[in-house]
Figure (cartoon, rainbow, N blue to C red):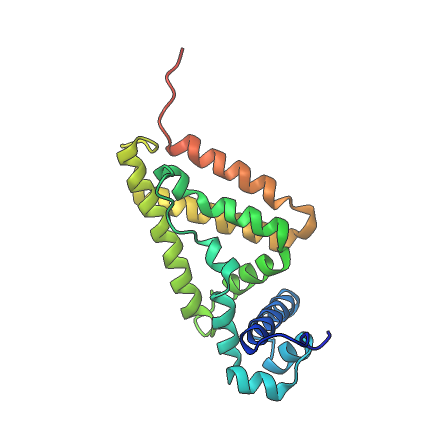
Length: 208
């Protein structure tokens, strides 16, 4: 990979190197997982020296924190949209996953691979991804509760069970995609799951 372009300001160089390292980490995670990936490998894949990576981050975990702070990752867990309905906010992450699947599937796959690595109690990514997961659960819960107020969600649903259903649906689709690869049309399945959730938890349609 070529060196950073000349003529950039220092902040621009830092941003460029961060992005390259994050992308390199994502590629390696999809190939061998986070635990088996070293900081030196990430640096080489990004086109930087081991010394530069150590000086910038100090540890592999610091690269992970930078990766989780990336704008794309943050958009996977979108903030509530004031003009949207509660139901729209509750299922918004399905749309964000679809968007990332279309424009950066490598990065999305890396996030899911790390998520499944975190099932091990000894996994170094467990704590960080647990916090990320909790944010997602809270967003779905808040959306459903708002939906009960604005009429986009049925008032008689069990919110805890609905949140569990919606979360499980997302991770179930992710697991299928990771295992089956290109044979699995993730965007189509995400759309189907989103429609099913709206149908199951939205207002009941009156029979004619």
